[in-house]
Image (cartoon, rainbow, N blue to C red; front, side, top):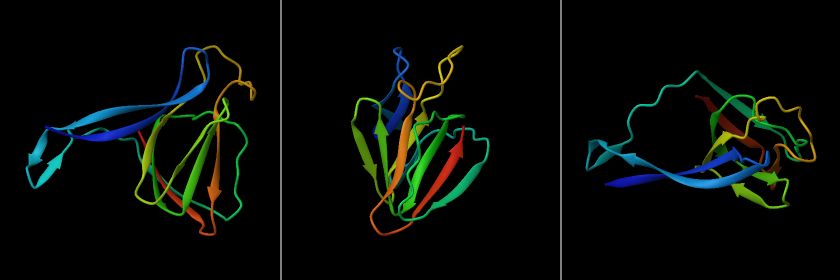
Length: 127
């Protein structure tokens, strides 16, 4: 059985955003076109961010896949680590604010920024 590697940005039990890896089984289709099971979605949005874009720390408001269509995107975490995603790369963004918590920019969420000299174009698919 073949799998699809899924990078997940999530909120850990300490309230901080972290990355982990998971796998999605490709159990449908044919050997020439292996597919995952069909997942529900709640719509999609396209975004273009100009060269130089950088956000402040924030949490994801609704769980969603993020696919980089062009350009590069860096995601930074509270612990000082970051990951860069380029065209064709993706992650599942689920670092929502813990239940009952008030957003604290010193603890919660992540920042994102455009990297390089090409505007960042992304596709968000809500789940």
